[in-house]
Image (cartoon, rainbow, N blue to C red; front, side, top):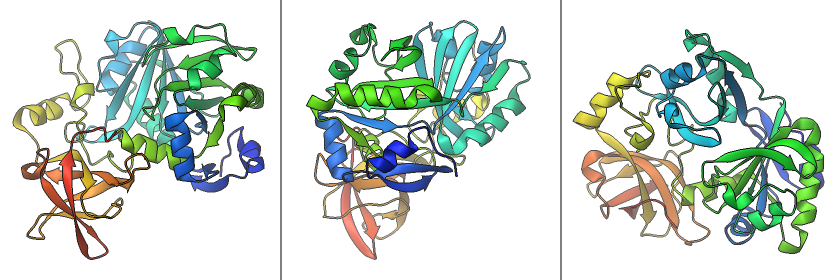
Length: 360
């Protein structure tokens, strides 16, 4: 089991530690609902150092990234980031990721913790362009400081104008006396804030500086449990739940990160273009409960005649809305907004309806 540079801090803060993606990670501190509302209304800090980071550099870097990702990385200018996915050659998704452009020949790919080894092997196997690659996952720590009060707190610790870092852009600067910190705005909570990338050796100093700066604002450490409920309220996909090697980006509603231009040739381009043109037999949709109940991953979705029409991929009680919410793949005849569906919960058929994302 791996540990991040913040493991001892999590323990001293009374975190409940669980195994996640091969790491011992905090699932909660004060409780998922309390932590969730702290981020929505104030500010919270997530240790996301378990995520993977791959440098791709050299004269063939862009050509390689263009081939292996679905989005159009040629549109990125230095200081811009892009959400994308890695098609798997069979119409499915190896992983979703964020591509950061530092220079025309220098990119950082940030991938999911559970897929670091899988993604690395896939990318190495596809690297016929001979781009230069480096797996820096074990050397880099990452904190996500999220919530409406995040900007004011972090601004105390840097001369970088944080208000100039728009959504899906980033910069590199001094933070809390530490040079060359990557400061990014690619949040997974919908509550605003930033992500910081830095060397492991600077982890404790940066954590301490952030919590000192945020003391008066009630800053709290936040576990992975609230991270999941926060991203679900925003309708953001979670790899392994809502997308995986068996789901296509078109089915998952990720056509907006799948770019079919003459200039870009990428893995599965023909397959996905055909899906976009001809349609698919299922779609990922959001739904909210009408009857009282909490949908969970794996629950069957049925119609009024008790015929299975889909499956829940993510589900929870929404701390903000106070109702059950979820996402799942539905047969195309049931994907229209407002359609009534039923979630099978412990042999009960609970009514729900298809709604537009996000949930809040």
